[in-house]
Amino acid sequence: MHSHRVSTVEIDEERLAKELEQAKEFDFAEPYDEFLCSRPARRQGQIMLWAPGGDNGDGIIKHYDDGCASGVTEYGRQLPYLVQIMEESLSVRHLRFARLAALTSNVLVPHRDYVEFDTAAATDKRPAHRLHIPLITFPDCYFSDDNVVFQMAAGEVWFLDVTKVHSAANLSDELRLHLIVDFVDTEDHDELLTLGTEPERVIPDSRVVHRPPLPDAARQALYGLADVVDPGNLREVFGLVARAGFQYDGGENFFWRTIAEIRDRVADPAMAARLAELDDYFLCARTT
Image (cartoon, rainbow, N blue to C red):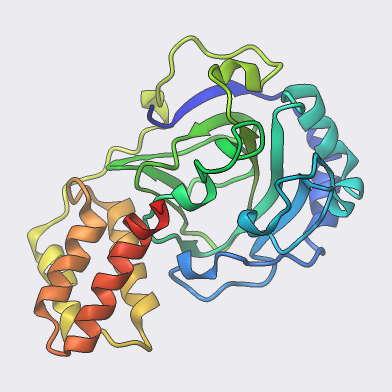
């Protein structure tokens, strides 16, 4: 199933704004630094609000104790209105993780998230469904699901199919904040919310970003990055290609097809091998 809008949460804007101002001063960790195309900005990353054992932890889902029941963390106790939103809108008996995620002036490397959805774990423990609820967002914030680019509005609830190649971008200097929640495995997604859900599981056309085709000159310029890419500027090269994918329609699997073309043109065998390793890591190796 592809990503789609599920519902909308009613939010007290004044209460939310007060808590988010407080949250901005917390120590956000960036456990998934390798997915960022730019160096993390201050307060970029995430804090856990709900986790196994109520443990703040390091934010890496695989590092939490599967044997513990999930509950509110110390960060969550300091943000009671956010916890109230979850308790009133979500089926907390299915809730495994909840985190407040910040993104500023950055693009994520297109990837799959199978590593976090380990099928070897018991179905009543492993996270298997992910929802996003934007709390602060801007017109320059985007998501992608395969070759579809879309935007989420504040207060909307979205199911993200993270087994698809996906990415996110904040092309502004403003701080974007999302509530990201992971649930244990259930057959019916409607069981995850106590809210009414939308009848159609689609990305509404009003949320789809209809991009112009990528000009051939721009495509060739991206391929020309093969002449300059090295270990020191790899993030920046990935960022240029990823940003182009949000601004233009380059076709299916645009990012990794472009990286493959750059790899084939690179003169340094070690650099070519590194690009091949990253392709495998972000798309394939994380499934094992």
